[in-house]
Length: 353
Ligand SMILES: *Cc1c(COP(=O)(O)O)cnc(C)c1O
Image (cartoon, protein in one colour):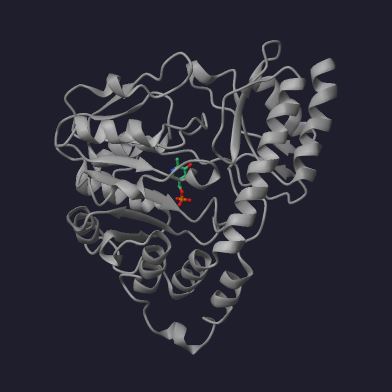
């Protein structure tokens, strides 16, 4: 605490991101990045931006990207908001849509940035317990609230909530914004974007960090009816008018336009996931059903923190959360077949030691 700080800074509890190690020879399965590179067309589009044009500010609303997203989903561009990573888009949504003085609801096991934003913006919140199978039970959200948010598939569990359950939730809470954080939707779920035209209370966020392999570029987006999008625009234009630079707008738009590459890499990740799940089960792990690019697994005979430490010694990093209900689980990002093999090769002797 310094006398120079605004008083509330002392009480902030910031998010702790997964480690980004400086060593490059590690098998990095801890922050759900895509094991494949971005679309070659996205790289080309970004290279094409590297000229004197960079002396000019970018388009403040990133219209080329908004249009690419609109084309992808066959929706009007007025339904799309873009920002510097979906974390920033989420922050604007918390700020602009959830500050009603009533508690925001989200699962007890969920993206740990949500309570951080609540702290930053002074939003009261109530965690809603997942059921014993770590699934979201929408009936449990039937209580007074100032909004509802959850990742779908959920993180860090990987479990998917079907679209018809989301629709029932939207119908049960017509006066609340329901924000579906679809960071992992492309790895096996059905997007709620199809419901946006019918539900003015639905906001969907997505990121280019996972399924489009652009975590290093920092691009995220929100899709909703223009009334919700306008709130995000108003916040953005009161915070940073140019969240996306020229390179990011061009690269992200090209990534959205390259459907073939996107579908191929997602299919490869899904295939690797299915094979990894089977082989982890053979090793005795219990693995929650995953529709994401990671799995959430526990071993009945081995402590998760000890496993993570032992893997780390062999140059493989996975994510372990100390939170009570999930302290015996490991979250493991799906890597290339070679990386997954390295994980299994390291696990086998650890488990039999
Ligand atoms: C990765 C992730 C994000 C953040 O994505 P960025 O666009 O990289 O900021 C948001 N929500 C969840 C659930 C995530 O896992």
